[in-house]
Image (cartoon, rainbow, N blue to C red; front, side, top):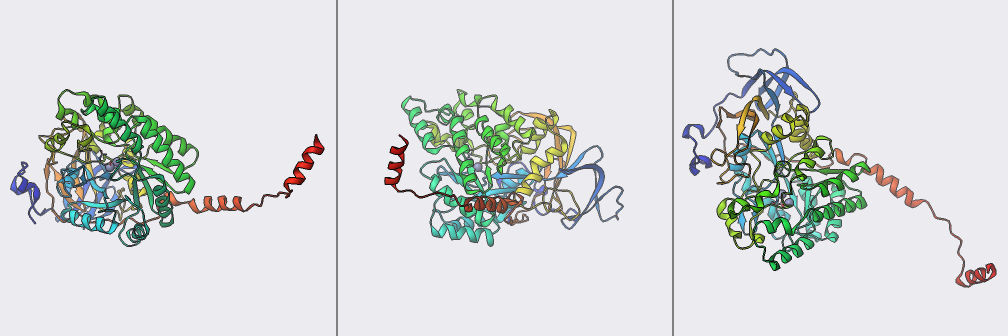
Length: 520
Ligand SMILES: NC(=O)NCCC(=O)O
Ligand SMILES: [Zn+2]
Ligand SMILES: [Zn+2]
């Protein structure tokens, strides 16, 4: 199959396309090897896609490619828990497919992502088949979550098949996007029950979709039709309400909950409260929510403003800093991107009406650099925490640790070398997405991913990509992650409390009246 990058003429030399000839034996020498739990100076030896040894002073023969990592960090490749490659949404398809989007990811140090399968007319089976086709060109490993958009016996049965045969261990419920993806509480309750019975994680896009719809009508009545109307129509309170509701429903069913793209203080505080009470709730901030604010939405140039339209909206300054603090203190656990890029032509669909601007921003290529610069360079988190929030925690939640998310003997050889003294700069002119815009345009920072190794192959080095369509593997995600530990016990406690009989004496209404009169 031809390399899409070369075909698209995005500026790659023909020689950088096609099958990598790099040796399958690699030794990374002298770097600081970072895992979420530990950091040490050591060598890492890779053979046939697997990490074979991690220890000081490994000696190898001439047939091994040696990379010097002295003074640099050797870390697990990033895992992006939230992406939408080639997603059909609001009458268009997000700009990068499973090849170009993944190539961009690799250039930024991400070596695996989990994408959301969208059912076809509610059918999970048809949705899965569609995404199997879309992902044939994959050049890095990937897994799938799945959205649930309608409820009946067929969907319920299909969820079993998805978990037990297809490798899906998480289902997302959209509480917004009224009229297409949105589900009501009734459906969420059924879905949460089914998730629990399968050991699958329930996920929510938390915004009150009915209220958003009302907010949108209000904006149009007021004559506000530009991108700022998007933010004004769906304020943080609607994200807070839906987050609280989903958390309470998950508590009622007694099943773990994952809140995707936490964008506001309102939502974050609901998650904090639930976690303090002992409820198993995971909160995922995304890069745009951590580093951007909504000022761009008021830009007089439509296309500039429109490129920042996503849901829930990027919030006013202050929410970004609060989300950073929540990430650094463990209130929020891992960072995604919700990468769903549109180009300027697609964003222009909404020139007269913000409601039809395709929602979504880029980030799959930028996430690792921006989290490093914003969180580590600023001193808010440690280098080991960086590994945890960009890779390890995702692997644990979706039950593939330590195959992924670790530099340990036996782990997959998905590795990055990051130079803390080098710098990065982001621009649509040099990024690897097919989009002509970038919401992080012009950002510079410290720390650069100089080498990416995916599946034991060097795919990014000297600012050059060597990616192979079809080389990425579909990673099946098994059910019953650590989040389900103890769920049965708390269920048993709850049921035994129900079984305790309440002692009552039965008195008839007449007797009660006599008693009442006697007392008087
Ligand atoms: N977030 C967004 O605006 N687009 C992608 C779909 C979703 O995650 O809600
Ligand atoms: Zn969403
Ligand atoms: Zn999303």
